[in-house]
Image (cartoon, rainbow, N blue to C red; front, side):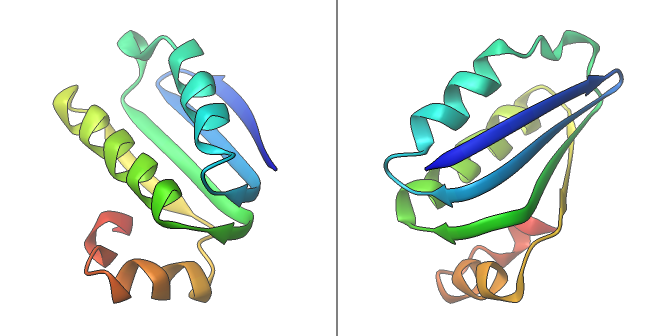
Length: 99
């Protein structure tokens, strides 16, 4: 189960994720993202420190979110990304998304 805590401190929004970002958690993340008014946001910080597991559905959701941010010229910042999660992104050729 995924838990998302959102901290809005314009011009930054922080999404702190914990649990599993998988097929069951993607809707939770997308619902939290939909609640944020991004008009006053310049930086979106995504905190992975408490992510225990991520699957291809979760990765797809992160890719979609980074595209959403890029379209709005909002900078992204990933923090607390474990070596295991970095390795998953690297294996599928998406490690540049985390930078």
